[in-house]
Image (cartoon, rainbow, N blue to C red; front, side):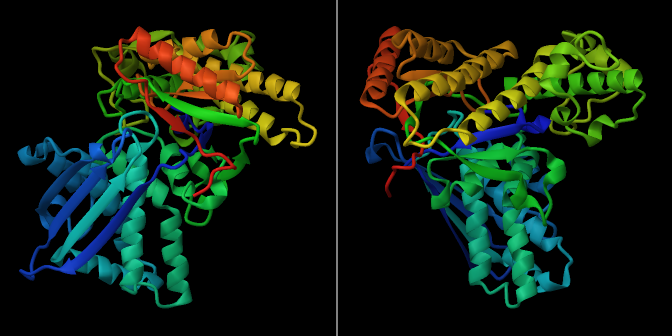
Length: 493
């Protein structure tokens, strides 16, 4: 819950996949030449229908071609993957190089005295052969954070290599290095923004980072995405674990349609429109409420509530939504406001028309939906007093919020026929919602996986299989769509 609203400062909630892993090993050895080393990456993706579907991809280049070995500035790495012909079909390696490079950049630019040994280790790497090996059975391009999982796994593996190399020798150095490790989610988000060119928020990176612990099993990772709360000292305070009740289950059904969050995607267009609408809204609120809020310094969800957006407040007898244009051309916006304060993540195209009101509405309403969703889970009755009728009543309300979220994706242009079909089938297979309570698209939208909430019961599992059969029949599929299982408290290793 909360997808495509993290960059607006919303509260979001993610539940990890059960039994799925992305693992990485990093090795650094002195290069034989004694000058520039080699950067090698190999990734093995395990197919959902068995190990025989393993897909291995390899990448190799000179270390100093991929990285600025002095500063590890993201610009050189991005340029390599954008301009080097041999890398055109190896864009996957940009996620690997970006995550590693951004972590090393943070270490090398930290001038704290206790960080001296770590900086010396980073400086030495340009003369090393680097080998990154990744193995994952997380489906790619399906809206289940596969790219973030790779980034987090790579950064963690590089951090582990640093520790093995002895970069921490004193208590102060250990604390400083631990602070950098805690910031890995933000470093990986920066890598995806600045190297890969995908304008994502940081919810996927934080969820992946904190889902590796056994304590997260069967728990939603609820994240406050207000960037003002993140720092070396407070990075751990922006999330909490919220249990999925034992009597509920979450499944993911793969629509078979890939999606992308890259710079030219529908996702990027929606983000761009959100920041355009945000600037218009805050300027209007400043004028009517005699304020001087700087749009670039605040998150959208921090300046207006869903109720104010729908009903208005002091300074606006009508809803604040009426002050944001439904649509506006890039040319008109730039003439009035100069910029939307989201450069370089997204760029306004003067010749395009953007949907503004719907994109702002999605962010502020999704923030409210997630907060209610989490509140219901946190107030869930204990198992010994929670009757079946209670489970269904509360489950249906959670489902209502999921259905509303799915519709909101469509309203901003991030829906798809395939995912709409899956959500519709969830409604049709269990009309009374006695076993399946709700469903929604996941991730950046425009395809991918549909998440379904239901009872932890045989009847719910039978209904899920019925949805898959009907979907396969409608789309003339040879096999049933792949089924993913969210982590549950009863899972065993």
